[in-house]
Amino acid sequence: MTRVTLVLKTNEGGTWVLPQLRALRSAGAQVTAVLPAGDGRLRRALDAEGMPVVEAPFDFTFGLRPGTVMGLARLRHVIRATRADVVFYHLYASAIAARLSTLGTGLRRVHMVAGPLYLESRGIRTVERVLMRLDTRLIAGSEYTASLYRDLGMPTDRLVAVPYGVDLVKFARPASSRSQTLALEYGLARERHTDGLVAVMVAYVYAPKSAVFPGIGIKGHDVLLEAWSRIRQDHPDARLLLVGSGFDEAGEEYRQCLLRRYRIADDPTIEWIEKVDDVRPFYRGADVSVSPSLSENHGAALEASAMQVPSIVSNAGALPETVPPDGGWIVPAGDVAALADALRKAAAEKKSGALARRGVLARAHMLSNFNVETCSARVVEQVLG
Image 1 (spheres, rainbow, N blue to C red):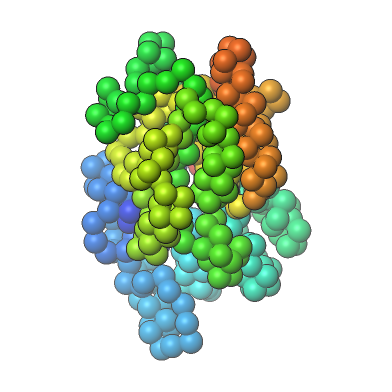
Image 2 (tube, rainbow, N blue to C red):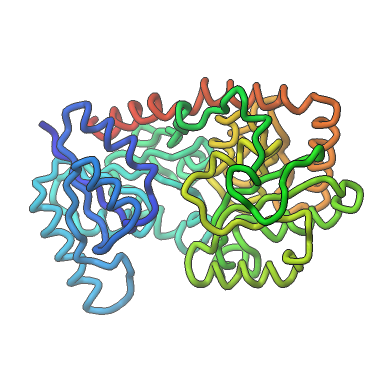
């Protein structure tokens, strides 16, 4: 029996590892997760499925201090105690910690890359040219990320692209859903039933990062709100649903800044819902999903497309991989005018009835390329070698 130890820097996010861990267990592997101490969505999900969890003795922060070396040494001890044959890690801080703490152990190291944002930093790219060679196998979460690693010099025989995928059973549009309204399902303060376009953006808000795209939120909320201000006068019956709170304290501060800057409380065409347990009702009530990120893997476009909602995405990162021909729109990242134009086209197609066809094509694209079961099986092949 192969023993696989997952190392992840979060106990809250990263729930996209669950299908992969289930698939590993089904393939006969013994799986243990090493996560930060404390409660979180991921920790609760792993506990519910009976997967062993060990609390990490390292905080996944790095610096020139004795605590970093001691923390990595303790992490090394924990990984050895799991009797791992394979160390499997996602997210960049996890990757650095897992690589350094297993030096000289002879363990198989498998790095799966959730998104390309960290490679936007020149300093990190320089470091990664060296550290990536510690990976026995690198699984890029998109073709775009794989191309970045090829450019860095990662040997092609140790590099493969496999998307995280989407659950096509969970994210499926019921036949009667067109008649459902968000007001009925969620009791929102403002009635959402409209004959106009309903656009939705599902994403946490991240504060601008100094290392990449300084001064601009990475998910592109500000780009969308600027574009929306250009179309709402001509489309007063259109509605915009923003779903997602700040990812952390800094992200929430930035969200509050956007609320004030764009006077959203006074705008009847916009509703911003902070936290939900299930995003599916919002997709059921939407005509188009918008992902205007400045850097992204596949993001929310997968879930939207699975629910037969076409997407408008930026050309950042791997987002274009989510949109098949005639299944949505791809616009230049950060281009307010182009995004506004795509929203106008979507509104026109809703009126003409053509928009629904794009949703059918979007769902078919997910079936062919992003089925989570197929993707997870491919990940298992790479992890177990």
